[in-house]
Length: 183
Length: 165
Image 1 (cartoon, rainbow over the protein chains, first blue to last red):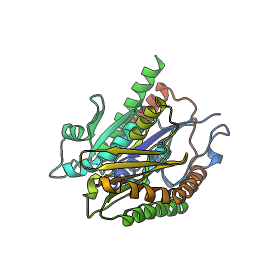
Image 2 (image 1 turned 120 degrees about the vertical axis):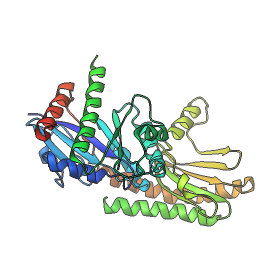
Image 3 (image 1 turned 90 degrees about the horizontal axis):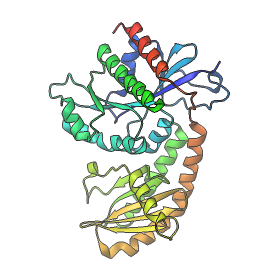
Image 4 (image 1 turned 90 degrees about the vertical axis):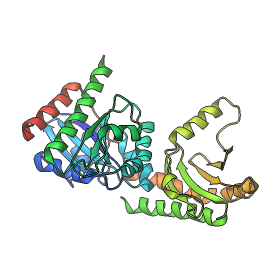
């Protein structure tokens, strides 16, 4: 039996809330974390991948697994972003929206993903919306110069419902993209 | 992060810092990129610039240059000089494995800077080679059986059932 793997990347600068987001999801969803992917768990006709950036995996069916990959937020690892993101079906770009300065810090990384993965479906999550000075989603979109069609979702990464909505929004985007591609 | 990779990145970063120290009154920033223009390490001369605004996503820049070069019969990127209104960009190819780029503030140091760049290309070539080797060993691509919209729909339903959204 061949196992299908859906690869989702969680991107965003250092301190944006990527780890918190996955941790919150794992409280409600059966996400296994800290389990390395090894060659033994995937098909012979597939290649293996690293363990170092694997945030978790979720088994949906016997033959369908979702992998969540995290990328290190620090710019000095930017060359790794491309390697980790290779073959992904979609990515969630999380920004700390507690201030405009924090969002501006994310611009370089966002541009990097836009440039390298221009046709990959993605959603921007404006995290820390519970902060008193939180910036609204339309301002986040403007600062990041995100295209019109890209969704910017409010997020409180510590809140389960909020995290789930964002994940589902990304999956909807991926589905729409696949439908378009199959036409 | 794999410790080998981390160590190599640190060495590349150190080389970039050494380049700045060769001409600290004129070199504003140094970038070391892979062959596609991904910045592997960069350093800024904080006495000359505000470090916060000096990180760029370079792949488009490099692919634009490559696009330009394909229209000119001069081969791969060996050395490029771009003069802006305030600063000057000097970019040198590190054989087929990457690029070294500096931003300088004075026309008078173009020649000297080029000599500095050439001095570091061998060392950076070796480091980038090691990095490419370590990365390939550590990271291999996940290649998927084709995913269908129905698969994604199943994931969404699964999440909704588990989380009762």
